[in-house]
Image 1 (cartoon, rainbow, N blue to C red):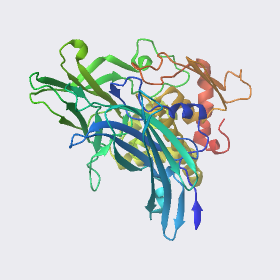
Image 2: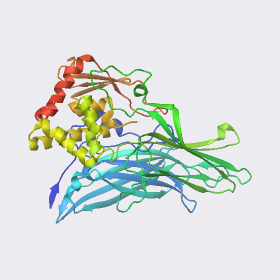
Image 3: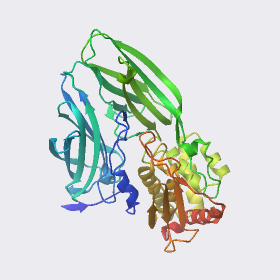
Length: 478
């Protein structure tokens, strides 16, 4: 038996931020579902996890567990012509009102078997789903994925609420979000486990239930799909001016400025549990909210649930298409060159232009191949570490990470973050500063670090770009 170990991402992850991503998968606001975060550590399996409480067709409460496991993050044993990854998933459901009360504890063991050797490079996912019956209540779900071939594990958690279908009151379950990619050979609905929706998903479905409205008090259910004004731009060069406090780049998202995509009203006359589904076509890039609100006897008794999400690049967080390969070249090109490349609409022509760009600068085909691999690994790593309302590589930390790699030292405070690429912590050319214009909260659930720019960084960025375009980045990062 041959033991194969592979991880598609470079080993030098920024540990402190990774640990931040391993916390609770939900926002602080229990009425707004945002899916899970990217949870990964160097050498560990990578998983994206969500848990939604619902009432099934028989009227029984249950928690739907969904986890997307990245094939390329796993360890495989070679058995004849088959690669085998052995995995274990542990799920613990805890009563939030009484944390000592463990409602359910389950372990599932299974194997992923693939004959394609390229599976060890794949950023595609295996989706694990289970429905676990529970009673009504507020729950915390602890989820652990263990790669049994390496004994490495990753842990995440989520909160959810299930109303009591026996109570003679009206209530809303959480909203489950599904997506369908019609370009697949066998398209089917799959759970959306994170805040981010890859652009290849061309249909969206939202599922929720209204429980036990009183027959003598008809219930009105209002639903809306809306798009918020948000920053989707690429980070400015290091020597440009800082963003103005009035700009959308500074704010990140302006929840007060929204576009209503669709609004629907439905009146429920009969009492009982009502399953409601809404389906939408593909949405353009941006940040969205699907929300449901019902009328109560008073304004305080109104019911509200929402599912926030962002539509991002086609294969997010991975990089596959010609346009996904072309966009991050903004950090290596001048504005005119980049603008001309992005005008190319044909995918084959755009891919040829990307290849010509790299080969024209580096020359040697073998060296060019290794530089390209290193650059786009950095882009994917940035997506998974710094993703917020826009792609991770577009953020300030993402830009520095792509160009310079993982920092040698990191210092953080509540408002600020310092990255150092030198033993001299006072070297102005190798120490970079980020600040948060808005703190993460239930009203703004993102890490939003802006890079502190300076005209003195012109030569610093120029020299770093030259390392990439000459291929010397393979010998040294700085």
